Structures are given as structure tokens and as C-alpha cells.
Image (cartoon, rainbow, N blue to C red; front, side, top):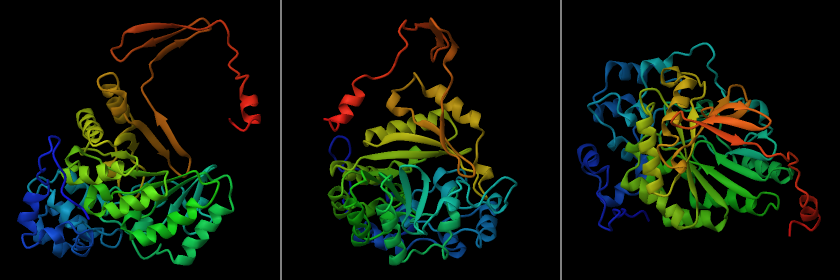
Length: 403
């Protein structure tokens, strides 16, 4: 079961959702509030429901109406309780309530911005990289993020995967020995029951060439009560399993979210974060730095800061590439390296991820290379006279089986 967390000094931590819960869902008991299935049943899914809880701006009201046929709306009571009902630029609000700009599809925006469908040999499988596959387990989420890159799937009704399709996905992986890494995503895999999740993990665990499984989920952010001891034990049973979550703003790092993440880590399930850079939501170095520090305090590794994909309806949230570079420039050297995520761009149309960082190399020569550091100061690195970088022991080591 999900239990409220403790503060860093051991005292009971006051849930961040408490004030919002009392204001919006005063009749919910503790047993109901901390039951993820109750949260799912009471998710806000329509304009009429939303207006019961939030005073929408004209832009938001039009956004809900005009995107109704384009993409689902769905907000868990927990995530809704974190919304600032007075400020339209609240980061929780911006991620969960559409605005009118989302209904405008601009030139260059793509329904499949990552080119996944052309490398989809099975309904459940995307095989874009040589040694890893994406396993699409379902099409539902606890909250439908307005910046979703896979809304062609999570819009609903078009990607319901049957047990037969899931079986065929597993068989595809079994028949491709080059696949060593499986990323389970969707939709949100943590919305599966432990039994259904185990039906997926167990056969993957038995495939000799599958060395690791990653699970992409926003549940620790939007529905943290789903992360129970039973779920954590299930994941640990099939180690190595890595959880890749998706905090975008420090406001999301609540005591409840911390409890969820630390429960996973305490059970031996590593957690890393992939944030998305969004205009006017987290597009300042101060916010990304605070987010990274908050994540490290709950033992979550800040891994990627994603440049937003060119998904349909997301132009109003995208930032220039230069903004991400500027943020890294302001972080590097001013905080621990663990707090500096990789800036990643997933190239439109299926080119894959590339990572960027500020260029510290001023000049490269045969005898020395010249750099400037994070303060702009000049430093010289002397190059070695010997340039042969082959590894003589490598062949011996491999011949002996890596022993």
C-alpha cells in the first residue's frame, strides 16, 4: 500500500496535495485518496468536470473545446490538487489543461515526430536503434500531458493492444538476438496491474539476450500512490529494471512523489529523469537547476533535458535550441555535474537522439588543444607524443570470454 512519506528529519511530511485536496475533493477519505484506482476513476475528463474545479481562462476554455477531437484530456485528482487555480502559467496547469494554440497545427509539425511508425514491425514494437526496441504496452495515461509526443497513440481508440499483439511483440524480441535493451512505454505501463505487468516482464526476463528493461512512466509525478510495495517488488524480481520518469518542474517534486521514487530505489530499482524543456514553464536555468537539485535529494538522477519534439499542436511550448544551450552554459561549473542533464534533440522524422553541450574547445592542434572553462578563462591541454590508442589486451580478454 502507499504510505505518506517522512520529512528529511524523520517527521511526517505534510502532503503537498493536502490543501488542494481539501478544497477540491473534501469528501475523499484517506483510503480513497491514496488508492490509485480511486484516483483513476475520479480523473477529470471533460470541460464540464474541469470547470467544477478550476476557473478557466477564455483561452483554456477554447483550448478544451477545440482540442476535444484531437487529444484526450485527463487529470488525476492528485495532480489537479497541485494546480494554482489563480495563475494560468502554473506549470501543472500548463501541462494538463490545453489552450487554444494547441488546436493549431503549424507547418513542420508531425503526427509522428520521431518517425516511429516506419520502424514498427509489430503493433507493439518500434525497432529504430540496432540493439534496443521500444515496446508500446498500452495507450492510456494517468494525465494526458499537453506536450505529448505520442498523442497519435494516446489519443485513444487506435492503439489498444490485445494479448495476441503483446505476445507477438515478445516473440519479435525473442527472434532478434541483437536486442539487448527493451524500453516499455505507451501510454503509461504503470497503469497495468502487477499481474499484467508481470505477464510482460517475465517472458522478457527469460530471453537470454535481453540484458535490461527500462520502463517509461509519469506515474511518480502524476499518480504517485500507484507506486506500492507490491509494484516495487514486482520490478525488483526482474532486475535489472530501470524506471525512467518525467518531472518537468520542481513544483512536481512533492512529498508524495518523493515517497514513490524512494520506494522504488529502496527496492533496488534505479530511477532517472527525462525532463522536457518548455517555453514559459521551465525555460530558465534557475528552474532546471532547482529541479535537478530536488531530484537528487530524492535519489533520482537528472538524465536528459529534451528539446521538445515537433509534435502537432506543441509550437507554443517549444523553445529555440539556443535556449537549451544557454541553460547548460549557466549550469556547467555552477553546480555538481550530476545535476547537469544532457541536452537531447530527437531528430524529426526518425533520425534518433543527438546530444548537445556548450563548446569549450577553442583550438585543436597536434601539440596542444586550447579550451576556455565555464568562466571563459583560457587553458591549454598538452597533447601526448604517442598517438596510438589501440588496446592490445582487448583481443586476449575477448578470447578468454571476458574473464
